[in-house]
Length: 91
Image 1 (cartoon, one colour):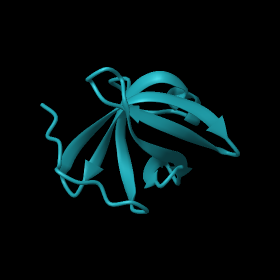
Image 2 (tube, one colour; image 1 turned 180 degrees about the horizontal axis):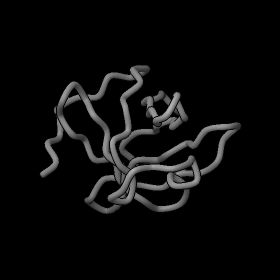
Image 3 (cartoon, one colour; image 1 turned 30 degrees about the vertical axis):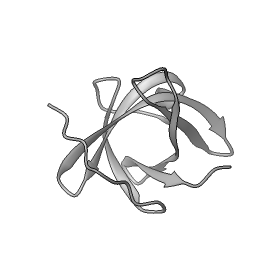
């Protein structure tokens, strides 16, 4: 079960625990429409949307379940053996 926190802190790197239901193996796993899960201080947060390549990272547009509206933008990067996602302000 995914537990959604009430807020997301911009600029904080959150560890990615899974993408499309499995362990991520590369940034390509985050491209196109998919879903990934973040660890936010022990709470799972599911991010649904679509990712595209952006200079060595993935720019991921999180979408709401209601009418697919944009929620926020994430930058996903490889960090050591894992992956991190950071919410960024994008206008």
